Length: 188
Image 1 (cartoon, rainbow, N blue to C red):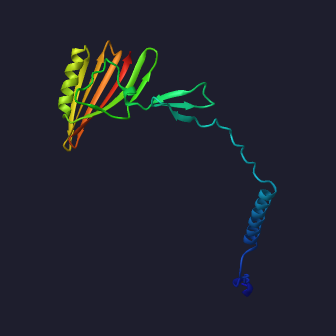
Image 2 (cartoon, rainbow, N blue to C red; image 1 turned 90 degrees about the horizontal axis):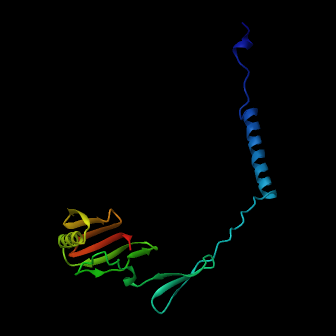
Image 3 (tube, one colour; image 1 turned 30 degrees about the vertical axis):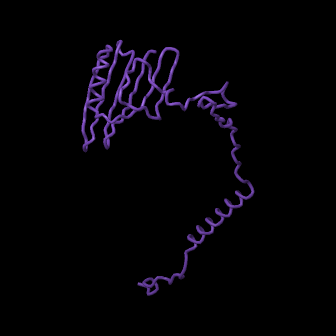
């Protein structure tokens, strides 16, 4: 055995040539990307023109009129609470006071909406009134009641004429006040 075979040649301390080449290649790639971004900046997207926002005015009768160049004509929306009153076929609760926030949508043949009200009467009294009144008007009714943490809630669902008119009354009590949400939909 040759004594030089048992002792391997000493290696240089430091980074191998492969690692140096990889680091150099990385720096070249980064420099290329930076140079390309300076010479060829990305194209900016053009802003898409949008129609102007509608202008709103309140006329003397309390109707909000929206005007926009994008629409064929002005659109009116009422801020009057009476404008969201339900149609005559929806019974009104005698001790209820109407609240803001209702809706009303009408087409040539149909009407739909939500009417909000409140009363000091308990939900069971409200439920009994709507159940008996709607039955007297020819509606088929379904009644549900629940109580959670001392707050009572009732719901009366009613339909007539094979479902051509639908009505739901939700009455929920909280702190001595019963809130009513009356949702209706059907033929005028």
